[in-house]
Image 1 (cartoon, one colour):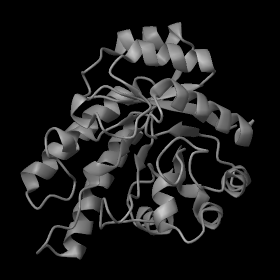
Image 2 (cartoon, helix red, strand yellow; image 1 turned 90 degrees about the vertical axis):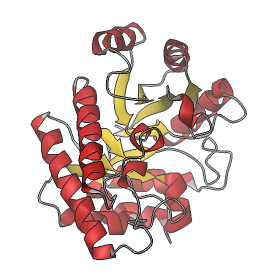
Image 3 (tube, helix red, strand yellow; image 1 turned 30 degrees about the horizontal axis):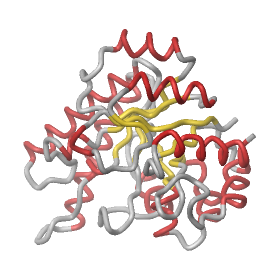
Length: 271
């Protein structure tokens, strides 16, 4: 069964990003619970930004699960990526993500690698850069496995990375890794830009999908753009996807209405 999820960001430096709830964790959780969401996806500045016992207490209070934790603050705040030409920066990136893996694992939740994957920088060799990415994912995948969770890698659109942009490219890359603990994030916003056919990509590569970002073509909540959800929902069900559909979307027109729109659309397609 596919479960509903809404995003909560607690990082001031990413205030303009695509997250439904901001800053006030408990208020966001209370609203999510009121609307009937199953879980939250959490973005924090670091692995120790919120104490594990406190978060466990809040999740129990509002009958919510932690679906995943984002790692983007590692790049936004510290400038860390897995493909930086500087090996010391790559080591720091691995360390930052490892800490986030440990934080998420306390709740059985995976960490997501999105912007921290980085880019092939001007003057750098693609083959070498991809080897750095593989090295980082192998290390982190093995660590995630030791903690009993998966690691989620997100193919981003061409305007955000020049590494891997499609579910097919991501799947073929994951196949080459030594670790078997890396799954893909199928972000419907990015897929709308890069995929020739979203449902075919899901049907062809669905076994590699470990998380879904549920946002429309314009990154507003689902239903506010032109994404054709019927075929996508059917494809996810066909491949047996049983994870979360998480609203990583702009809080349009505001957080509460965005959350309400999301749960309506989730119920329409997945219940």
